[in-house]
Length: 93
Image 1 (cartoon, rainbow, N blue to C red):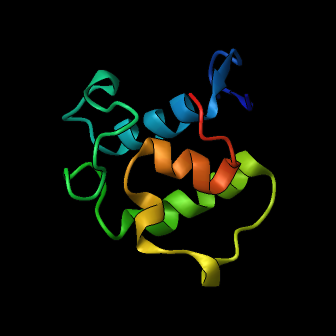
Image 2 (image 1 turned 135 degrees about the vertical axis):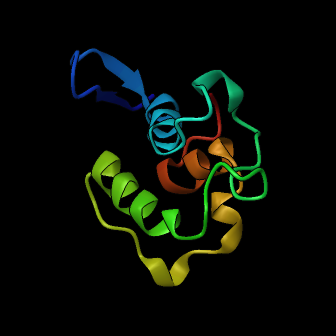
């Protein structure tokens, strides 16, 4: 499992949780428990198409390396599970 650190508390959180928190920070009308690993992010209205560029930058920060945008498919942003397996290579929770 990949760990990242929260900015404020510096306690470790998994990449799925970091992605979930990133989304919730942009949508103050939802809580983190509203998004599970299979919640449709764009179709469900949790992300707008304009958010995708910022999300890619955040994923690059988490990964510590750049993303080849030419190899991306629209399905890569379907849900947290797909995001995680696409960009971090680990299909498990």
